[in-house]
Image (cartoon, rainbow, N blue to C red):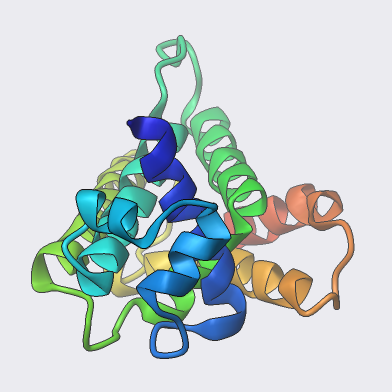
Length: 187
């Protein structure tokens, strides 16, 4: 069951890169997933529910990837910052279509308020982590509203440029982007 659902999600993400929401149909998704149209409807009520499920899944997957359980108790704040940033970068590089999906659909009319709320889990995690760093004197007093643009926007832009074939190997920029981001936030 999960395999079929994953095929549907992957096919939808792949189509989004070229077709966007209004340019694709459930029959197109089914064809790309190599399944019958009725099978898509067994998993999702309609295209809107499918897209909202993907939206929520992307944020849940990102949070799980970044926060996965490691022995972090002995890491300094800077080491954890590096670890979380690198994980966010890795997630974005390996899930390019998910990142592009978020970029082009975050404020779309078909994304439900409940789905938009799923973004808050990632934001809350980053805000709490950076507040900890601010309280300890590692992070400068930057308005919370700037955290995501400072941390995430450069990664999103790199993914966008890679999708346009303007950047060939995103991974070679990871350390430079980490350094720039840390320098923008450190006290």
